[in-house]
Figure 1 (cartoon, rainbow, N blue to C red):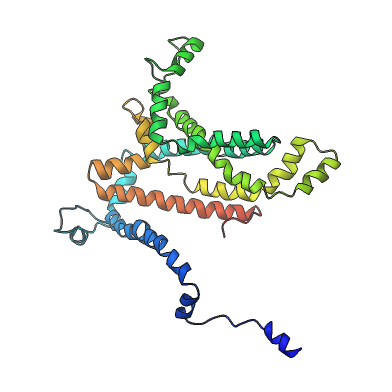
Figure 2 (tube, rainbow, N blue to C red):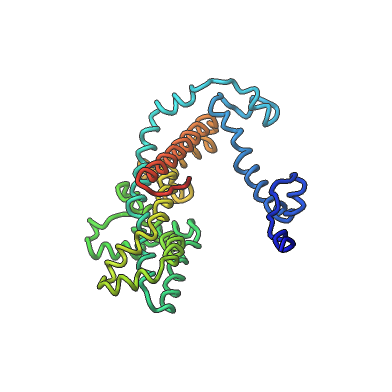
Length: 322
């Protein structure tokens, strides 16, 4: 009896790092590419944030590092110039307009589509529908911008000609040049391209709902809408909250590529956002200090929004991220 009991005595944890590496060496080797990626593309570039506190110029030194060491330190002067400049309020308003509209209209779209797909009983049709709504995600934004320009072109655009038949030629909306329609166009593109792909995480959450809950509700006389409201939505509430926190954390990140592709001289007043401003100041005009200050401000605000949204979720009884 004592010999059998000895077999079940758990081994003590601990040991040196060398012993841990020997036991799991292949796992350690597998994380090396990820660690290198994080160091090179995420942590190493953070050293460039010092430019936000300098009157930086790449010509101040003979080498890249020399430019950092020889550029004069100006403290918060660049930030003061950025906040008091004529562009700050404009790009902040434009960025928030797109982000809030996306939060109101685009964020619920994958949830609603996932609920609809979950109600389909014919599995063959369900898989075909899922495949069809996933496809736009894999289309390049360049192709999406080209399709939009072609469909809404005032010369030979198919959709524009349909609109002229409905509203008349003098009242047909010009999507590409009307500044008031820029935000709906950007949100509409995002909804068409990403709604289907965004349903994946919600469908995965829905697959974990206990089927017996639906059976019990059906016995109690609940219809389909009551089961969705009282069982399905509460079951994926934590997933919705986490995705909402992530979405709120990107409130100042509207995406550079899409805005840049859809921007033109007629809608520039409403299409200049933080991402395009950073590109214009840093790459086009060579004002690296101002571009770095704008990017740093955007990152700090996004971090504060994530922390605040997580704290708010906890106050309402949700788990949040941590």
